[in-house]
Image (cartoon, rainbow, N blue to C red):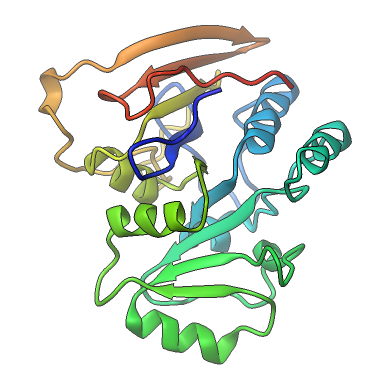
Length: 242
């Protein structure tokens, strides 16, 4: 498996998209673009990771738990001296997070959820949160390079990023992603109000830059494409073995 190198974690972006590039629709319930086999693949990636990062909008919209579901994988992590679940990480500029969200569940004093925010957001979160959490103010604005440096200092070598669109855009536009795993679900959304995978941005190399395609696999009706966005700090491919 690939590990971090060069002073920052290995960053793996994981996303499921519709054929027309959306990550959800506008219905109240979350749109499931993957299938059970792909959910299991993602669970393997979670078990591989030291930490899982999502943005505040994903916490608010999807209310994810971000846990390793497989008992076998949890036991393997424990046998390796790791917590059963990777550390949860979120990013919020304003600190507008629900203190009752499932994101805070399963946090412990030894492995609390980690929140990167601004100085203003940190003050709001200190007032609102009662669950175990570690709050890191990055300054007046969010800076993802500084975020990765801080994670590296905490011993995080493998970071899995699960969204949403603003977060994926920030990592790709900043040249901070080592791999992109794109699960293509056989659906069309077609609603301009629905959230898309990426937002407009200036990406490294512009539209003529071609990412390296590392692998294409089929899981039932889902196609999984594995890309290297640019020269990676880690020359080893990322693989999972359950």
